[in-house]
Image (cartoon, rainbow, N blue to C red):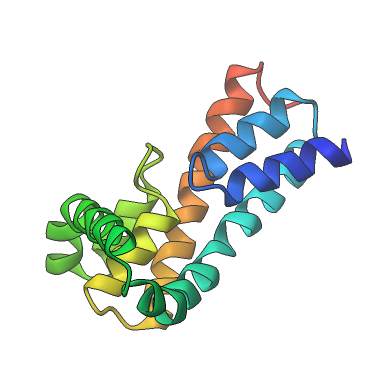
Length: 152
């Protein structure tokens, strides 16, 4: 069970699935449903400070290289296009709604980048991401539990 929870947390940290993959993975491998929710949620929330550090420190250094800069501009445009209208118009609430939709490309990675690009206050951006992640995790968790036969 420990290994399954660890893998679920790694999925929750991964930009390829986040908790949208981590929670179902844990539950399908017979992990405790409540522990799986909490650990995957916490792992997913930890992305925000890591991404913020990356955007503040590492990104500026790597922007000197052409291929990195080209890729960063591509990712930035995608994040702006996905969240742009809502974050620009509604700020905190727009970012929260963008992050809470449990589909690929709308998680904490894109939410952190969108908050950074639109110059949202860090505390508000973190709170919007955390609330959005919580609701997204809750949707995925309840859906997975119900698909597996409901709560015991």
